[in-house]
Image 1 (tube, rainbow, N blue to C red):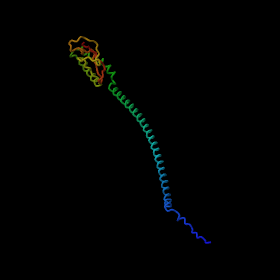
Image 2: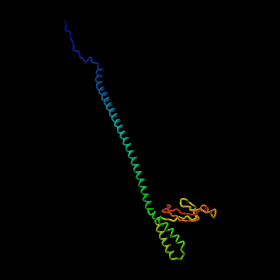
Image 3: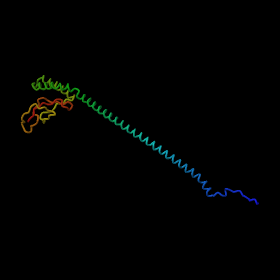
Image 4: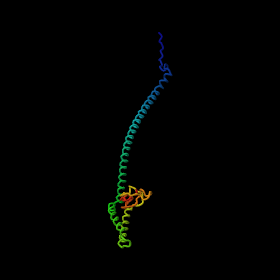
Length: 204
């Protein structure tokens, strides 16, 4: 028998070159795809974390904005109350300074009335009259420095804001109707406010 010559089979010769190349290229591609997928997943995770953090920060900012608005509202209320208090106390202080002697001055007016009536009944050239006139003048000057001012009512139109009608008489002329034709008791202002109404006779 003839011994058959068996040559060893070379497996390399039976491998398809194209398949081998494909297998060689497939492994890196799979690694790249896996890396890309992992990176994409990581990016999405970071994005979700960032969005969550942004939402949390937005919520905190809104809460702080609400607290700030509330504090600002309280501050404005307190500031308004303080301003009102300051203005009120300033006005009261100014009124106290201006009208602090109001009661005393009002008590002095009957004395002034009596002195004026006495002077009207005294004869001219009387030394006593001249002395009383000087006293009355000095007294009125002192009172005027405190804001006292006599009211000019004679001949004026009757005004209930300044005048008190004690009686009415027929008007001597049509033009005199509704005017003051006599002053029974003189009226006075104190710092532009009525201290005493003038008692007058009105033509009707």
